[in-house]
Image (tube, rainbow, N blue to C red; front, side, top):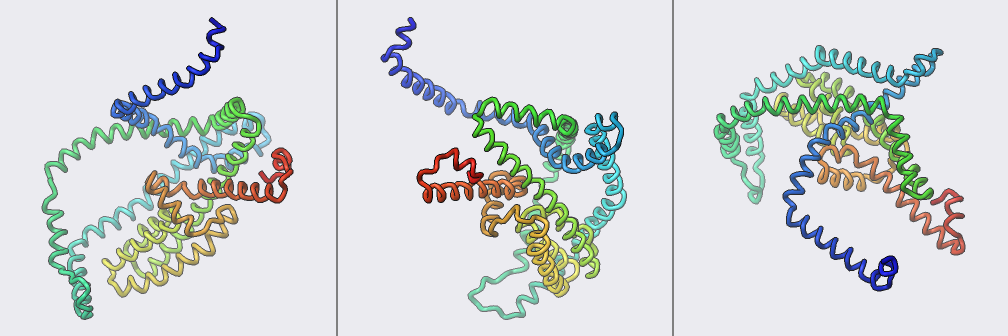
Length: 393
């Protein structure tokens, strides 16, 4: 039997057998694509809270590590031994305190701002008609399309008049069930975040052991090298964008207060948050703020404010951000714009947020590969090990 299994005939049959088995599995997968898609979606739905918890834990690990270092400086063996758990507990307490402060001081102001904006909605029609009258007085060339204010307002009226109130009511009732599921998933996410923070060192050590066990030493070294770079890039990106968002949001809020905007705090907060999205975030945030100012305070005020906001935005993008990021993200603006667009297309807002550090790593890999090839062409006799020893590869 062993001779038959090792025979030339058997060795020649095996590839065809494997190919046939692969084709059968592929055919069944295609025919049952809906079945597989349903189960994959269900598995992804179950897994999502833990993945989101992992992402949150990764972000919170930055302040958690700083708190842990403070505990390790205390000359007490018991505190040093329990430093990780104490740092997680301290971080949770800090988050709760900040949440209470925000809920009592900031949230009411934001809610009041939104309510004021909604209450004044009836005045926006008059504002819009005033804009249209101004545009008509400009005597624009005939080849430009004529804007009929009644048609535009008619679309707005039709939209609100045709809202299906019964459907909205049923959606609200169904929303209670969705809210319960969301609460349950939120609890799962919070629990997974806490446990991942607590078990961070064990998870990291186990992952390193697994990678080392299934890869060669050279591949393992490369994975560790680029994982450290990617981790550094994400840390720098989160740190820099957070600090920059606080700076930009604070400056914009103070600036909007100077212009007596009733929505200064809300707009400043929005500008600080959307700043996490490279290039597009501050542009869209500024455009949104100018639009709100145009509706609430008039076009002249908004036009003057937009000039100063543009100057602030450019100063931030060309001076403050590069100083915070250093040389970690020396990417061309075109590459960043393309990367953010691709990230948005495949992963939505989350893709826009994380794509830049990932692209920075790919650029590093590509730069090193190009340097590798250039050096090999100049030194044809150089073997791979010597090249790696030189620290170029």
